[in-house]
Structure formats: C-alpha cells, structure tokens
Length: 269
Image (cartoon, rainbow, N blue to C red; front, side, top):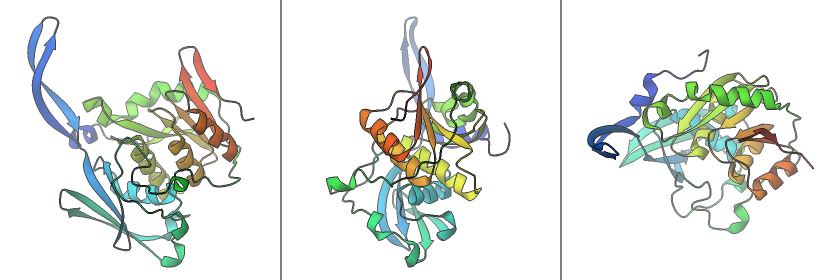
C-alpha cells in the first residue's frame, strides 16, 4: 500500500460489534455487524474551548491540526507547538498550543452548539460566517479524468474502517497521476478531510502536485476547507452543489465528479 497507507486492523480498532436479526428473503438470521465509533471531540486552543465535533476517535492529532488549518484559524502547521489529547466526560478533548500571534481571531467564529457529523456549519450563530472563502488562491493544479478514475478504482483499498463497517467516509490524497498516497477516514466527511489536511501538513506535502478524492458528495464546505488549506483540486463521488461550484470557480479550485458515463471535470468559467 505504500508509505502513509492504512493498516487493515485500523478499521476493527475503531468499530464496535452490534448484534441483531437480519431479515433476509430466506428468513431471519442472527448477525453481528461492526459499527463505527462516534464520540464528542472537543477542540481547544491554548486550553480555551472552541468547538465540539462528533467524530471517529482516530488520527485526532491530524484532525485537530487539519481543523485549525481548514478553518483558517492558523496558516501553517508549524504554528502548533503541541497537541494534547485527554479524556473528557463522554468523549475526548484535543488541545492545541498555539502562540496568540499566530491565531487568526477573525476566523474563530462564535459557535453556540456542537458540530454534528453531517454538517460543517453547526453552531455558527451568524449567517455571514457560513461562507468564508479566501481570495485568489488559484494554484493551477493539473487534474485529468484518467487520474481521477484510477484513484476511484483504488480507493476501497485505502478504507480499512469502511471495509469493516461500511459506514465511514474517506478523504484521500492522490498524485497527479492518480496514485493514492495517503488517506483518512471518519463518520463525518468534513472530519475526514480535516484529518487528511492535518496529515498532509505534517509531511509538508506540496499541495500543487496532486488532488483530494472524497467518498462523499461535494458540498461547499469541502470546497472551503480545500481552498483555505491551499489545495487546488477536489474530486468527489457525486456532483457539486451550485454553491460549491460557484465558490470553487471563485477560488480557482478544480472540481471533478464520478458519473455513470465516466468522470466529469467541471469548467472554470
């Protein structure tokens, strides 16, 4: 699988056995399914609470770093002096130590409730904070349909959690030729992307040399996170929303989606 790949046992390590009765055409069968863990993850900056996200408790250092970068709270992983993960009531707390001068307080929108797995906006109190795009981040990343198709075909091999529970999303980093080099998984698509962004930052990956592949639909929040992280191309399973496409064009982010007829590369008008 190569450097950065996922171990086969990682899926089972983050899943819980659940017994039930499978009602099949041939009759009821006692069955055990593996279901993914989903716990509250509190994100703190310098021990001050910022947000609580529902996530799979794996790769939390990557998640915290990627969340900070993808939200625009910091501009470089080098600004993080340390990350500490501790148990906290029903979940976990991840505390990032960052010099105050490196914290972008203008990007730290006020949140009033937890961020749930299905939404990247939960808790944002002011509608103006929902769409927060950077300006002029175009990186001219190459994106070919052949590379996207190749990465799609290989993606299941990089989803050990999903192989066990068939429930979680994957975010993968791919070379310009479509080789998957790194992947992260989570019950939430936004969390999976945050984890991938954090992992890429740790390795100082050149974000102009590849693209992100997501096992989910293309929502505008994914476009925002990629743009803020400096990623130039994003491919997803389904088509983008109109807003996602609009923001991607605004940021110079190339988009692709899987289709029954092949791979769709959207024009940048």
